[in-house]
Image (cartoon, rainbow, N blue to C red; front, side):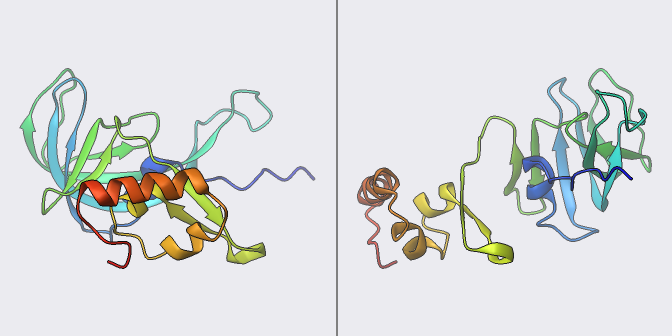
Length: 164
């Protein structure tokens, strides 16, 4: 019996997964389309090829329910319809109800993984630099001198102390 490897959640889905089903989002596509609606569910799926096909892929996607088409681009989206958001239909920008950025294709995330065995956690380096990550001390202890210098420099620029 052939077992497929566990599917890793890509960065887009990782960011969306931070929100509960029903969360209101505004989704922007590079063709100018802007949709308003809510997150319905996140699920694992595939590209419908045979699993022995070399192009077969499993991935995570989410269903987004459209409540309003704010701006139409190349595709014709309809109110009350659902769409799949995934790495194959990736928006260029997603904002939450408070206009916080959920996903921006132009921002690349960087993570440090730390821990042992099943206790491995991903620490968002951007969060450390911006001062909104509580794992800072652990990351400092991992010997990442360059990262430490970058954080100190960023904190000096914004007049934040390392104790904040």
